[in-house]
Length: 457
Image (tube, rainbow, N blue to C red):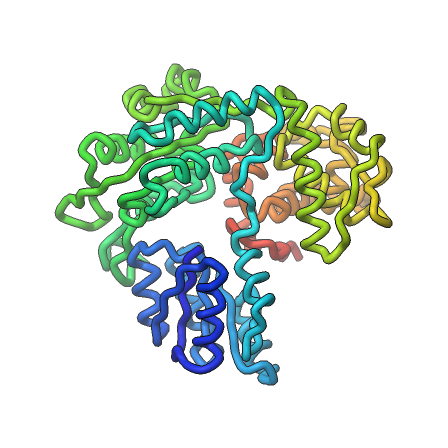
């Protein structure tokens, strides 16, 4: 966890930084907004920005958005300055921390930013074999290709490999190749020089340089454009990269882990993925079994998620009843661990008392399928879960319902295009085309990491 504090490092802010450091964060400090932007562009892998409200919070957040730097920002200030707190939140700050700081509040904010557990929860022999293989390959420098259905835990396994590797002291940097448009992914990976294209207001280091000495995860690698695949292949072969707009190569020392939810050999046969790049990445191949193939994982995962969401919502720990567990164990889990996580979150919220009964466990796929005009097979229950109650469809056109379903699903997935496409049962390209159509009509589409409802009008 790497925290950047922006503002004058004195008094209560200095105390906040000290508390964050005691809670395990690596803390760095800069006085000005322009200095903060230089740090963010420099590829230091900042996970969270905390800015003093005496700085121009709105300016910082606008610059971060303009340059598409994906880092959450929180504000802090003297506790009784309510107006400053409101301005910061309206400007886009995720949280406001009153000063002097409360140690538990600082800890909670840090935990919220890194709330996704990177521990592997497992009790099934099929998953144990996968973990054993990952730990054997981890100390090597070999590239690893991790495959498996969406939601099986590919990034979690990638992080586990990094932690067990000789590069564990270096950065682990993840790039979702499916969530970033092709014309921006090149700059995201390789960086760019000032003036390389419209909006390139300053030099920015890419993910390769940010991961130098560590591990770079190329998530959903199969979605990458063929032209960019060629540039990536050269980077892997020569161990050097060219920034967009640059005129000299830059040496990098990066271990690559790639993931895909597709059959990569089929992608190669169909000329959608370069064969030479596939073999370059596929030094070691690890397939994560679906949750259906590792049923003994359902109980420990369910208990883990129940405890996690009970704590997050301020509830006492809730025990899963035998009937509820039976319901969970008999489900098909098309969305794998991610679907189970969402199910347990709902169950914690819907249950009363200290036990999760079967009635609180709402599962997808149990009602009549309702295909729309584009062949997206969704159930009545899952449409309701996505935020489109059945009764509200009356009077709407098929296009309206489709639009609401797509945008609500995207919101539910925190803007992650790959996850949303999987839930909807459509390709990532079909989803992108739909989103472009909505954007052209002036709709506000959630970006990765955003949870705000799109303005549909």
